[in-house]
Image 1: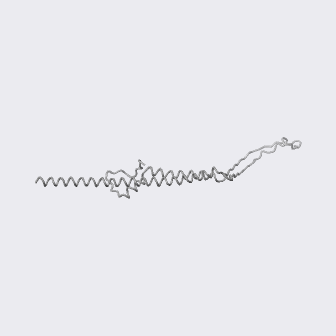
Image 2: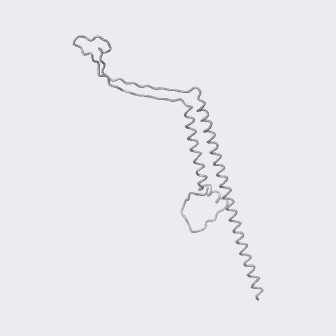
Length: 169
């Protein structure tokens, strides 16, 4: 929460800020808030991974081979003068498999836990934003109070100087 992400170009001129502007800039550029918002995306990804364990598993395999078969090896009679070899020929094999667990308590609990982690991450973002708003507002009001003290001290110096000048004459 102590770091920030700079944007724009640096200027030597002071920038007049309202309380709303100060809070808006703090929320847009505070690293704590940005990290908390990124953690929501990470936990949502983990939730999708946990939900994937509840889905059916689909697999597939495709294969092709070129074979030559010896018919004599399988006990088929071979005509006199004929070749016992058949082929070469291609064998194409394509298979699809689907599996689904009927009840997987571990996967169900993991999906519920991931959903709770997403909710916790969203609440963490709200908490981070509330903290940044509180600190930015407090610092803004402290700056206003300090400026008022400076103005008061300058007025007291002018009053004292005026009283001193009148006493001298």
